[in-house]
Image 1: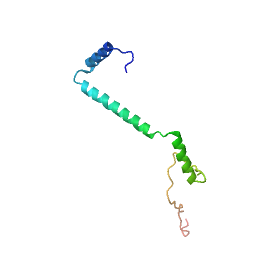
Image 2 (image 1 turned 180 degrees about the vertical axis):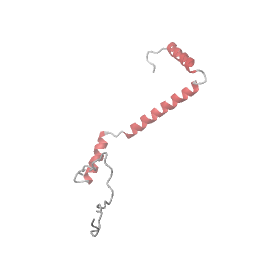
Image 3 (image 1 turned 90 degrees about the vertical axis):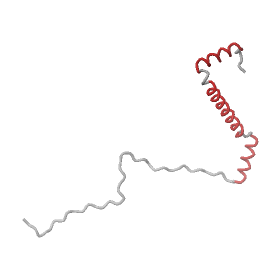
Image 4 (image 1 turned 90 degrees about the horizontal axis):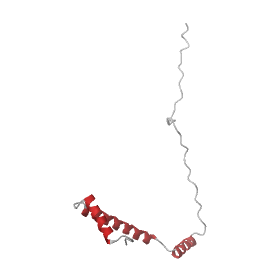
Length: 107
């Protein structure tokens, strides 16, 4: 498991860890490492469960294509152009009214 690490090297590493973290932190450190390993194993098992062998996947896609005689053509989505810096125009703009001057007043 540890390759070329011998017993004395492992003891030396454990002593250094004990000096750095202290005796009080070792249980918390071990618990964190254990949870990390458990989570990693769980995610690996979930990934393996989602794997489908190529032959079964080909059979599933072939049976799905038999139901659809014609392939579906997807159309690109149309988006509205973006306006930058211009405020939105009001919903109803009334025309400007001209000021009417009475014709009877002559100076």
